[in-house]
Image 1 (cartoon, rainbow, N blue to C red):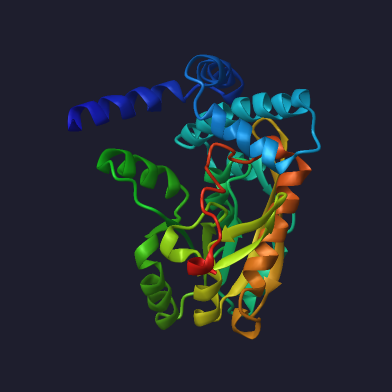
Image 2: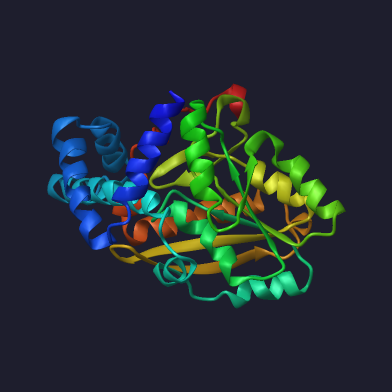
Length: 295
């Protein structure tokens, strides 16, 4: 198994020397296989789109669906391309329009929780810390059960010096950073459905009156009194993204309970509605129903 891992890594390392325009040719193959042959979670994607956009015709739904699957294939290619993207190239391809927004907070000694969604090339988001010096860049992640796959993705996610914090240990690291006097940014993605024990907050989202959102990020930010910032990602064209940093609170502890989670949900919805094809529709986002037990 170890030998196979290193052989696959070597193959990917060599293949992804190719420039992205050529690698996107592989995207078309992946798209064809996922959409027409394997039909990967096609029923989930179709049902999600229909329930979110009842006003759209069947033709419009299928158009979004096909564009999503091509984007899904592109995302796989762009993620693996991280192996060879230089710091200068990733900064050009994943552009932060207003880096001064975080600079202002960091200069005040404020550490920041940065929330985003599975929209655009989310695996490129740790590169935003390349704009800042003297700041610890970190991201929260959920460990993958396969140890070799987990090792591979940790390597990709830390390629620009970002520290990766296991989800269940993240608060311990935050306290450690604060005690050490570090100024840090902590990125995390919180747009997927929470597990059953974490069904605490519900709101209207994408035509669904009762959608659960994980309020753990807000609770951590309020407890540690972090600043709270949303990363709004736009896809400009293949391989290029434009991002805006939106500060929701300089001091999370001064906000009302669930206020930041609600604002995150609203901004995430706005991002998706701008162009729905670039969100991760393969997730069973509305599998949990609200009842008396989970409020």
